[in-house]
Every structure is written in structure tokens, then in C-alpha cells.
Length: 284
Ligand SMILES: [Fe+2]
Ligand SMILES: [Fe+2]
Image (cartoon, rainbow, N blue to C red; front, side, top):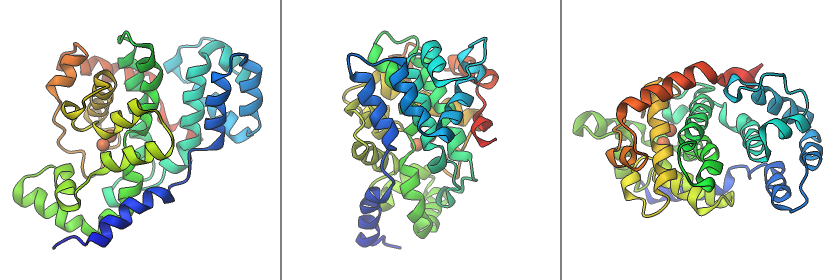
């Protein structure tokens, strides 16, 4: 069945229909860049939204951060975790509502994209710890968190071409992603990079999303792209949030090489994540 140009146009246009990045996230970034930014400024901003503040505190108290005493206020959170980590938690908490929905197009149950994304975010942060570049360490969590944001858009339309995609998968042995691209001319990674652009994320993040399934095609930001690719792979190996497209995931050798890792190292990462991440924390 040929795919209509109109459907392709509709998908591309609907990037604009996604809600904008929450204002509090933008505002926080601005505050953090101001030379006189203090823990109180951040705390005042986040505390304006009590529901958000309590979600941030729940995440801040995850075993992942290893903070021994309970963090009971945002100001304490800034002091113990630092501005950047707190920013990550605010972003994650604000995206929760958007991400926890069922993605019918990808056959992902309610909560599955959230689970996949939050595990990927912590995995990316963990991998980034061994990378020398500070900018990479600071953006890895966000990159992991939003790498599949394109699925939010694609899921609305993919049901219309689902059977044609599955035909290509079953008949021609293509991966779901390849079939998606063959039929539509783009995949969720490309659509996701458009969303990141719209949300005014920096170019490195746009690249990481764009190439998370094909790190060998990225002409810059090799560390961040590789981190997101391998985090994604590790999460799918753990069975975290795989939809219809997550069955077979070829791990890119170049990404392993870039991060000086062996495939075995992914098992170590999985063990770390299993013991320290609890994505259900925001649901209660
Ligand atoms: Fe993906
Ligand atoms: Fe993914």
C-alpha cells in the first residue's frame, strides 16, 4: 500500500502540536546561567508548583543518588545534588505526564515509554561519568530521557501504516525501524530531533536523538550519541519499555569503541541500574 504524501505531511506538522517544553524547565535553565544564581532562587521557582516539587523530591531520594539523609526540601536538593542534577529531575518530573501515556502505535503499554526513558536517562548519566567532557556529562541524562520523544508524535499515526510495516518486517526481514523509514521516509529518531529543535535543546542533544539508532552516521558529538545508543540498548536488554520495535537491537561496534567499552560492560551497567533506579517512584 503506498503511503500518502498527506500522511507524511501530517506527521511532520504534528511536531508543532506537541506541548511546548514546560516553562519551569526553560526558566530554570535561564536562572542557572545567571552569575548570581543561588539555591534559593531555584527553590523558589520549583516550589511555585507543589505537585512538581514533590515529584522532584521523590526522584531526588532515589537510591541512585546515594544521598544518605532524606532530602526534604528543594533547597536541600540543590545543596546535595547540584544545579544540573536538580534541573534534570525537574525536566523528568515535568515530562512524566506526557510520557506515561500508552503508545498504541508502538504497542507500548501505559507507563512503558516513561520506564524506558527514565532508565535510559540514568544509564546515560552513568556511562557519561567516565567521559572527560563536562558538557557531555551535563547533557547525558536529558539526552537519555528524551531520545524517543519522536515516538510520542509517530504513535498517533503509525497505526494507519502498521500492517504495511509488519509486512516488511515479516516478509523482507527488515527491522521495525527500517520498515518505518522505508515506508514513510523518516523514523521516530528524525521526528524526535525536530521536537528537540522545537524545544530549543542544544545541537548536541538534537544530534544524539537524531542518531541514537545509527551512531555511525553522526558527524559530531560522537560521545553523546554513543552514550544514548548504548543506554537505549542496555534498557532494551533489560526488557525496559520495549514496544513492537524493540525485539532486535543491533549494538553498534563504533559506539562501544568510542566509549572504550566492551559488550560485557553493558551487563555491569544493567546490574547498576537494576539496583538503583525505580521508575515507579512518580506514580505514587
Ligand atoms: Fe529509539
Ligand atoms: Fe529507545
